[in-house]
Picture 1 (cartoon, rainbow, N blue to C red):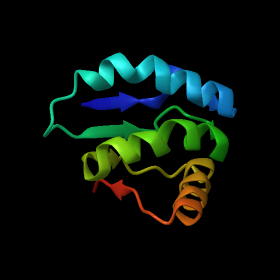
Picture 2: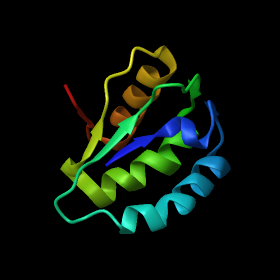
Picture 3: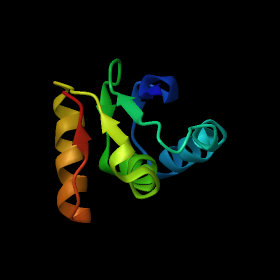
Length: 97
């Protein structure tokens, strides 16, 4: 399954909004089969803050482990945020490619 983060907006910047987005995504996530991967597409996202991403991507990473795949992005905001999360949480995201 592919998830376009732009569906939650182009400026993803607060912890509260990240938490709300994660909660809103739960019914869709429950429909994911046990062997199906979730691909995160950052296309259209202008700004991704570490706080929003920590509330949305970190719990996904904890639930899905290797089934969470990030599609490549050249957005500097996205790249910096992912680097911060990886260093803070001592784990890595799988980048599809």
